[in-house]
Image 1 (tube, helix red, strand yellow):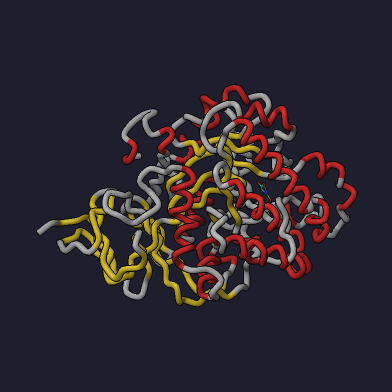
Image 2: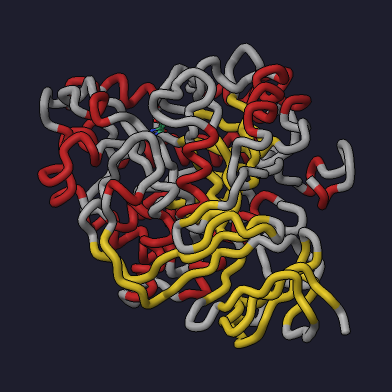
Length: 448
Ligand code: DOR
C-alpha cells in the first residue's frame, strides 16, 4: 500500500471538473492524486468543508522596507494565511521603492523564513529605470512591472504618454497598471472638500479612471505589450476592457464589490478612502454585472494598510487605502452565500484566474503534479468580523461588525499546514513563486 505524507479526507474537493467528494493525497510539496487509498503520515478530517485551490492575492502592499509601522512582510503574510490566502504578489511602493535589482533582492532576503505564504514581488516603473525594466522583470520570483499612472501612496509615478511608451517598450511580460489620469486629477484638486471624504470620488472621478484605461490600452496595442488593469472601479472601463481581451486582463477588489459610497463614506469616513475610490451603489452593481459576464479575470484585495492614527487625519491629509488580504476570501464566500457569485467563479477569480493571467507554474488547480496549495473553507459558518481576529498591523477593517457566511478554516502551502482554525504552524516557510516567463532563469521551477 502506498504511503503519502498527507491526506485531506471527507471533504469536497474543488477539482478542475468542479466539486467532487473525494480525498486529496499529498507527497512532498505536490498533489499525488485524488481519491487514492493509502497510509498517510497525517490525515486531516475535512467533513463539511470545501477544499479549494489555494487563493492567490495578486495585489497586496506589505510596506517593508520603510513603512513597517503600517505592516511588514511577516504580519501581512500572517494576515494572508489566516484569511485562507496561499500566495501574494506584493507591491513596490515601499521606502525605498522596489525599483532596482538590489531592492528586489533585499525583499526576497527579508521574506525568507518570515513570510507565511508564497510570494512574488513587483518591480516599480519610473522614468529613471525604464530602460532597465526588461532586465528587472526577468528576476525569478518577480511578478513583472507595476505602473502608477496616477499618484497614490508613495512617489512612484509614470504619467505621460511618452514615458509610458518607454516603459512598455522595455521588456515582454504583462505589465500591471494603476489607471487614473494624473493630469485630470491635478486639474480637479479643487473638488476635494476639506473634512469630507465623500468628495474623494468626485475629485478622482469616473472620467479620471476611464481616460487612463483608454490611454493605456492604446499604448499597449502600439507597443504590442500585454497589460493588466488593477482595481477597476467603473462599469464603463469593464465595457471597454471587454473589447480588448486580446491584450488586457483586469482585476476588481472585494471592497469595490461590497461597499457603496452613499453609505460607506457617512459610516466609515476616511476608512472608506482609497485609490481608485469607492464609488456609488450603481457602480458596484455595474462591476457585478460585468464580473458575471466573465470580463473580470481576477479578484485581488489591494491590501493597503495605514494606521488608525494616520486615517484619523482630516481629509484630504488622510492616506488612501484599506487592509483587506484577510477578509478577501471571507467576503467572496459571503457573496456566494448571498447568491451574487458562484463557487466556480470564486475559484476562477482567485486561483485559476491568477494562474492564467500570470503564467504561474504549478499553481491554480487541484490536480496530480500541481503544488499542494489549498484553502479549506466552511461555506456555511456564520461569524462576525472583529478587529481582534485581524493580524494586519493596521488594526482595523472597513468590514468590522459585518456578519459573514463562509469562513476560511485551513491554509496549506506546498503540502504544509500553515493555518488550521486560526492556529498558525510553528514557523514560516513561504517561498518565491515561479512564472512560466522566467522559470528557466535559474533552478528547477517547482521546488522553490
Ligand atoms: O488606496 C490606495 N492605497 N491605492 C493605491 O494605489 C496605493 C495604496 C497604498 O499603497 O496605500
